[in-house]
Image (tube, one colour):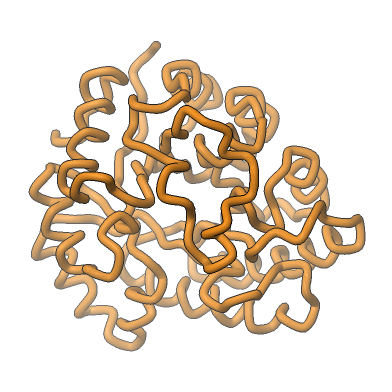
Amino acid sequence: MSAFKGKVAVHGITWGDKFEKSFEEAALLGYKAIEPWPSFVLGFENRESELQQLLDRYGLALAGVYGGASGEAGRCFADPAKQQSIIDFNVRLAQIISKCGAGHIVFGPGAPRKGTMTPEQLKQAAITINESAKRTLEFGVKSCVHPHLWTELQDENELDELLALCDAEVFFAPDTAHLSGAGMDVVSVIRRHKERVAYVHLKDLAPRDASVEAATMLLGNEALLDFCELGTGVIDFPPIIDALNEIGYEGWLTVEIDYSLHTPLRSLEICRDFVEQELKIPVRS
């Protein structure tokens, strides 16, 4: 495995709504950048200088933010009635994060999943995503499609067909656990869509079948045991890092674990140590 040339960030989701604690403990662990939750980011609308001051206080960069069709229960890319609200939501996020140096919105799909997307749904999703991406790019922010278990966009054929319908302004944010959990070969997917890969979530999958629908997702939450600390699950990470190096990826590698069985501090310490010791990627330097 050759040396990774990109940068490591951490996701704030593990801390839930304890936003400033996520900044504090991420910095304590030596992470240099964070991806916070959109509700937190939107709280700084028209107060972006205060968000920047908070980042500066903890020595953190803003890697990006989760957006897309998220942020409203039942909203999805495939629903034409939600097109404008999705565009407006992501433009607001882009305006805020662009003033704090971030350049990526992770385009999370709508949930819960109601079956395989039809050709008509894929076409409508592409229309909404294309228009949203064009608008966020006006602020220098790339919109990155993010397949996610138990949502409208989960399976490999859906991803391939959707990206084929998307304009060049639309990018791709692979998540190692969500792709693996949906039965995809992460390495081949990264290679196939190498021109679009612009942001990456590094996440492990618990050693059980996580491709079946989790009941908790119906409430808007992922199942407690579907994901785990890096190195404790089933994903083979070195070939994935090699694939990212092969395609010349030098962007953010955002460490993520949705829920901690220990404490967020301990879980992200385990993840940090795996990245540094096993993947030989510096986090604290």
